[in-house]
Length: 138
Image (tube, rainbow, N blue to C red; front, side, top):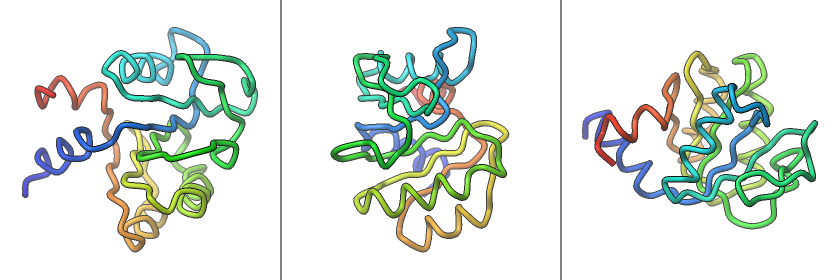
């Protein structure tokens, strides 16, 4: 399986995405990507402690992954690389059914990625689903 096939499979299979580092500012990449994904039919749960309780994309913004009730398929991380480890650990603990950890452009934590892969979770690093979806024709 090629990397493109793997990514296409992930993006076709996941339906519920927790977007960590969502911003209410329309000019921020996390805002635009969340909106793009929601417009494509994904359920996007924004995660931002400073915005918790507000409504965005038809969802209540959560302070942390632990505040999400229900199923999540993918965690899309808009945080600095050095802040990824605790996010991944919380995701692995909170969502046993998790399918994918997605680290956005410029984001990489090899140790956190290895922990996720060891639990059978797909990991995508230094990519953006809002770029990959059109590029792959999904």
